[in-house]
Amino acid sequence: MSQPFSYQTAFSRNIGWVSEAEQAALRGKRVAIAGGGGVGGVHAVTLARLGIGKFHLADFDTFDIPNFNRQVGAMMSTLDQPKVDVIARMVRDINPEAEITTFPEGINAGNMTAFLDGVDLYVDALDFFAFDARQQVFAMCAARSIPATTAAPLGMGTALLNFMPGQMTFEEYFQWGDKPELEKALRFLVGLAPAGLHRPYLVVQNAVNLKEKRGPSTIMACQLCAGVVGTQAVKILLKRGKVLAAPHGMQYDAYRDKLVRTWRPGGNSNPLQRLAIVIGRQVLGKALNAS
Image 1: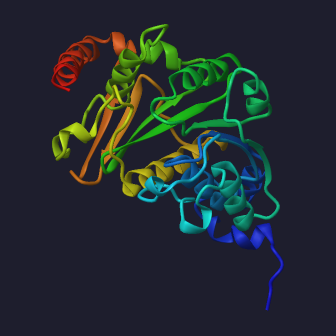
Image 2: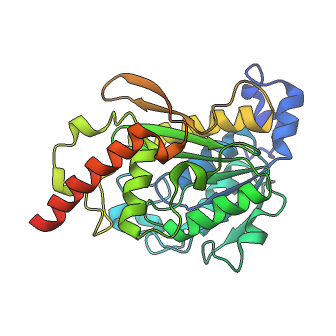
Image 3: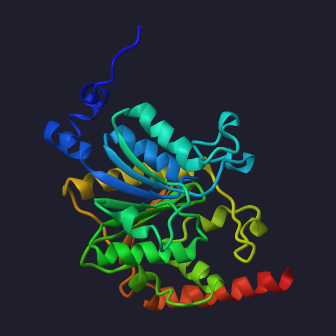
């Protein structure tokens, strides 16, 4: 027998870890997620099950078979379908009352203002190599005092950075400026995970190729990212609990059973980061010369 949807019943098991008043508050919150792939889809589903009631979802791509290892929306039944439409359907299947605005062209200079309008939290789920879009959206979040979070799927773990209003910005931390894309990629990788917990167990070294814009991935990392982002959303949206903000960060690696809190004052201008970038350039240079 079909049962009518009830928001209170659907998310009643959240009560205890959040109060009834907090659950009601989450219902009215709007979260923007750029990217519907590896982490974007599982972020959206996780936040929907948390009871978030409003979403802005952006992605221009369609599902393909190479997405199957990590993307929750990628299935035989969704091949060639727009990722943003599939993820929106999944969210509505969890909460038919959810208010969803989709941006099927992805985010760009022309729609970024609309994408962030009325948003309480921005969740970064863009492809690693989407440098221009990422740089622009984080800059607009800073200008509009919108909390922004990114949890990177690295190996079989996750690395977290929050960028909170009035504190260190994405640009101040990563210091991309107008640098070439390879340099941005290197600075992003080094800045995301200063502890580098994932590096020792990469068994096929040439699977990572920044020049060709490709790298390996796992579903475990994506799911860990979503758990971390969902928890950060609770703390940020409900103003409850300490929020680590850049230059503070965190990396957890399930394969190595390690958790490290990182602190890099000055971001990528920190002496430790500058050294890591120099070493990274040398390693990258050797890899490019060998290819």
